[in-house]
Length: 391
Image 1 (tube, one colour):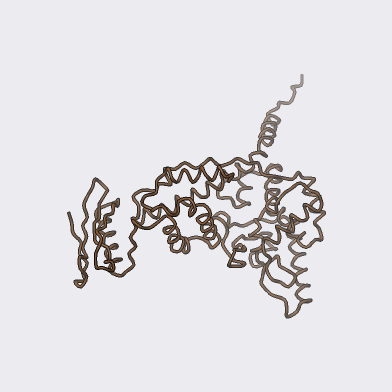
Image 2: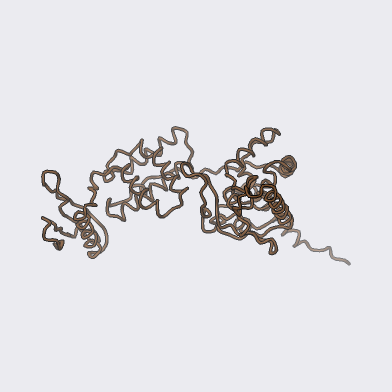
C-alpha cells in the first residue's frame, strides 16, 4: 500500500492510498472535503491503468479537494453529469449546432428517463429500457441510435475521468439502422419543377442545388471567395445554420470529407455568372444600404439567407403545383441519383456529396444500383460478343 500526501501542512487528513486490486486495477482511497460540521468522508474509487496513472489520478483528486473544485461523484446524477459534460467537453470540442443537438437529446430523452439515477449506479438494463420505451412511443430507430451514440461518447469520458469503472452504454444494444429508400422525383418531374421555379425568389438556388448536390447549409454558407469561375470549381469550407437562441451561425462542414472541392459544369458556371451580375445590379440599386457580406446567395439587400427560408419556400412551391411530396434536401438526392443513373462511379458521387465514406452513399442509394448492375452486366457481355466468323 502506497500513501500519497499533499504538501500543504495546514490541511488535515490530506493523504490517500493506492492499493492494487488485480492486474491493471487499483483502488484509491482518500478523504473528501469537510462538511459544515468539520467531518470528512472517506472516499473510495477504482481506476484502471498502470500504478503511475493511478497515483496521478489520486494526486488530482487530492488537489481538487484542496482547491475546492472536488465533486462527490457518488452523488452526481446522470442529469448532472450530462450537464457538466455538455458545459465542459462538448462546449469546446464540437460545433455549436452539434452541442445544441446534444443538449436537446439529453433534455428530451435522458433527463426524464434516467436523469435522477446516480451515475455510478446506472446499469445497461436501464439504458436498454430507455431505448425500448422510445421505440414504443413511435420514435425512429435513427433517433434511438443518435441517443445511443451520445450516451456512449459521454459515458466514455466519465470512464476516462475516473468517475465510473465501465461504460454501460457499450453493453446496451441499440436497434439496427433503418434502410429507408429516399423519396425521389423522376427526371421529368425534376425538369418540370426547375421550369416551374424558374424566375421565383429561390429558383436559381433550386437549379444550383440539383447541379452541385450541396447541402442546404453549404449553399447558404458559400462565399464568392470560395468560387473560382475561371477554373470552374468551388470549395466547400463553411456552413450557415440557424441555431435556436443564437440566430444565424457560421460553422464548418459536417465531416472532414465534407470539406471538399466541387468541379462545376459549364451550365453551373453560367448560372453563377448570372447570379453575380444580378448581385452587382442590386448593389447599385440599394447603394449604401447594401450589405457586402460576400455570400453567393443573399437576400435583396445582400444579407445572408437563413436555410429554413429555402425549405419553407420549396415546400410551398411543391404544394402549389401538386408535385409529389419532397423536401429541399431531395434536390441533393436528385443530383446523386442522376449521377449514378448516368453511370458515374459511386466513389466519385460520394466524394462530390462529401459523404464520410462510399459505404454511406451505397446504403442511401441502394435502390438505384440494381438497375446499374444489370446495365453493367450487359455492357460487359456486349464487349465480349464475338463477331460472326466469315467463311
